[in-house]
Length: 93
Image 1 (cartoon, one colour):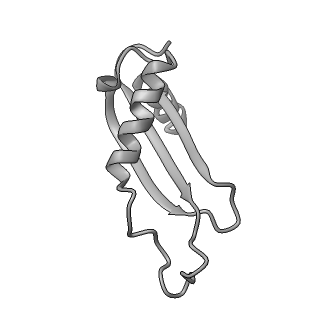
Image 2 (tube, one colour):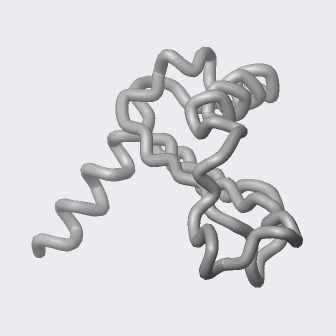
């Protein structure tokens, strides 16, 4: 279980309707709303015991895109801020 402040990164890969070409609509600017998708992931990660509560998220990067060439679903990455600080200090050496 992750404790302390965390960063959450999510990419949602959604099905492109067959009636919508990539040229006509390159981005999924229709429902579901990205904030509602994020809320569902946060609650699921809490239920799965990844963290105590989604209130631990202090940095969030989330976007949705069509799954063109990818499986539908979500890429989810949870990082503690301690991990991020370690990565940055290693990069500056």
